[in-house]
Length: 363
Ligand code: F6P
Image (cartoon, rainbow, N blue to C red):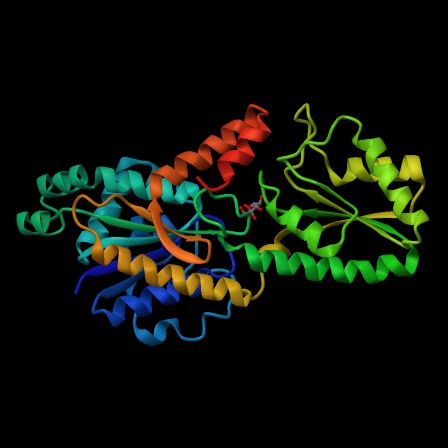
């Protein structure tokens, strides 16, 4: 059978294990040899025990676990050709020519580069007598299928990245817990949530928790946000509300591009309204813990589809990302998605928020 390897790269997210499990089981089911690569690209470069064959039971009891059981790492070696040459050798010597990468846009871009270079890497390995002419011919193309694992939901081309739903659940649990104590003391809480430059988690958390105000990077507040927020908080309190919840996305900015921090917001609330105010920064709690049912099923569906995509690939097939489109698992061109995701980052840097939001939407 064909050789497939699966690895997780970049920041972890809940649901990655479900995706790994689905790749292993679907691969074995259709007669492939499936390998784990531990510690992301670093494991691919280092080889040895980092690349091991998986069996049916090696992925038992992982679907309910958060994080990634096969590890993830940032890797500088893979950025150098020498590192990629070692990685190619490690794969060819095990008969692996199919890769499933679960990670963010950086990890997917790396995989695409690797594929483009594959032929010249094999030529060099042949020249150095690391592989035989037979192996050179047999393993001439590398096939790639990606899945996006990230709590941020910041990738263009999929409705939901693997992990976002679980992180949102974690945030909501935390806000619910805060609400009960805020109620007792008539306090205002400012909660900082993750998401890097994407406000999805903050916005959805605000809607689901009945928050009073939310700051997100894609909609920088007009410059009088201080007055607006005070007006809103006074309005809610005079309507009988005992507490206020304000959500600040970690990437929130004002029109000038200056960060809007929880501390800045607190200062305004305390100085102008004299409300008893506390800050809670949720941090990595959001990325930890068990995956939600949605993320488990999403990981399963994506993983199975990724294997099918690899099996159907021929020498001319471009790498794909398996994504969710209106509840369907679909294959979309990897580089198109990566480029659109980069264009969003550029539009945000140019303060063209309308364009950023437009690009994030469906094409
Ligand atoms: O991309 C996921 C994420 O959790 C972001 O929301 C956050 O900005 C970042 O990673 C934190 O990175 P690190 O785990 O390296 O501190």
